[in-house]
Amino acid sequence: MRQNMNYLEEYYNNYDEEGRLLSRHGRVEYLTTVKYINECLCGTHDPKILEVGAGTGRYSVSLAKKGYRVTAVELIPHNLEILKSKLSGTERLTAMQGNAMDLSALSDGCFDLTMVLGPMYHLYTRDDKLRALSEAVRVTKPGGYILVAYCMNEPTVIQYVFGHNKLHEVMDLKLTPDWHCVSEPKDLFELVRTEDIAALDEKIPVERIKLVATDGATNYMRDYIDAMDDETFAKWVDYHFSICERSDLIGASHHTLDILRKI
Image 1 (cartoon, rainbow, N blue to C red):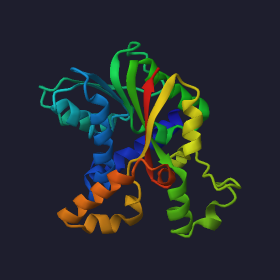
Image 2 (tube, rainbow, N blue to C red; image 1 turned 90 degrees about the vertical axis):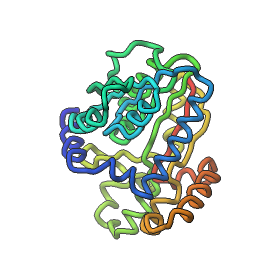
Image 3 (cartoon, rainbow, N blue to C red; image 1 turned 30 degrees about the vertical axis):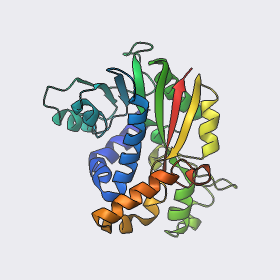
Image 4 (cartoon, rainbow, N blue to C red; image 1 turned 180 degrees about the vertical axis):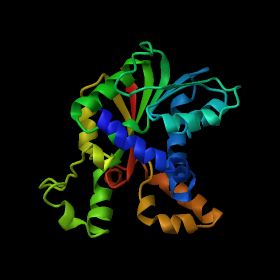
């Protein structure tokens, strides 16, 4: 885990994740995630929200500034410092350093909504993924929601392996015969398929509500998206919302959001 932490610290200390989510193409993912967060919170009075892997606080701080009670857990100290710098002191937000696979500082069944929007990108074994998911479920109230984000396999094959002409570099070591990318900590991102997500869900006490393509086709054409005027971009987001739950398109999205309810 320490070696994995070193790779992650180096990456996030030098990567502008906040800027990505504020870009036009990044806002599609952000707006889609917010849409489903709001759906999950609808009808719950003064909900308690947990974000595991809160990053620089793009979601946690925004929710806290709307008046929600939020606990933000983040692994990387650099990210946590940025998150805290955004707070005025009036928000009901508790920020702490912690690991998605060990939320022992938090009690069972505390939260109406638990968001795991980054950790699954960086967990490489089935056991680690299930440990993180099990912890998220444990701290969520029965009937509460768990939102889990994943990075998907096929966009990397399409855009990186073929689009960037990396086939001969990765064919023997990084791809299985059925074209599933094989990741390790130095690669930074773990890539999955929809069937991999479903297999994880089967092992935890949840029911799936929806699996959503959070950016859909957006990242395939990010330069065009970033160049759109406001009216065209609004239409693109409207179109994206209309198709983001279609099962025939979800696996080709760069990011997905698994929306679960604790049984």
